[in-house]
Length: 388
Image (cartoon, rainbow, N blue to C red; front, side, top):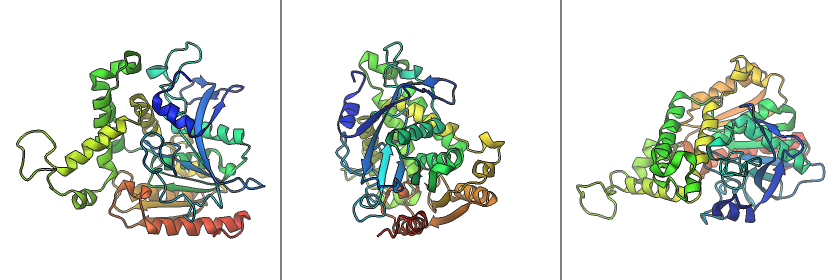
């Protein structure tokens, strides 16, 4: 445990952890065998007698396993408390809900901050590059560890939605229903470009030290903050930014004619950047953005996306948002067309919202109604009975 940061120690003090890959290392897509490795996870609710009510939540790029409760580092509510909780769509009274920090993460799961078991030194940039497929295979090992043969539902938005698609393609017999939200079957050139800007900001920070900043007791705080600021703009819509901030000034009545934060939107972004540094690791940001960039579900199937879902028994429900320009609706429709070509059971809804990509994390009644209706119908088919 001496390889952990304070953030990881706080996280692990509040959640479960599984050490996996002791007997059989995880073979990563880059060709490296990783093991043992640790996944930190949280659970909510109880597994029923026939183990048929398990739901896996897959988090987005900057998320973690704390989906529903007070975060141990920030003190803020969980990232999906709008959806998960007593009396909500994903009610722990009905479902056994699992959420794991992804492989490569920085809240207790093995990533670049961990120590190489062979050398005893921190991995830093020597940690092998991981993919969304690697993350999902590690999650499958976690389910094996928990004795859960299959899942009633896998659900997630953004990078979480990529994991959902990977689950459905790689483990179709283990996924009864799949709900990919605001995502795509492959990362676009535009999104790769935004990620590269963030990575370059981190690596240009003098405190990054070639990725070995922990050995020098430094943190590339400025670079990581800029990366977060850049990414955060893509999570919002122009209308949402205009409605919330417009050109309003920050704590002043006139322009300052300098380079302090004159405008409220500038102050907001600086706050987003500075608070992000307190809970996220810069190297993990490099690795996880790269995993998203590499995601291309059709590539492993001769470039034909429909082949990834050939013969699938999984029931799908896809959702997108009208103002999401990071993962626009046309990318969800591409997945729907592939699923239709594979004769899959699929439903799709485009939700009217001006909140941008982050809408999947917010109070969106149509999203809640759609998911609730889909899961209630699936629960009856699954034999879970009527879910109230």
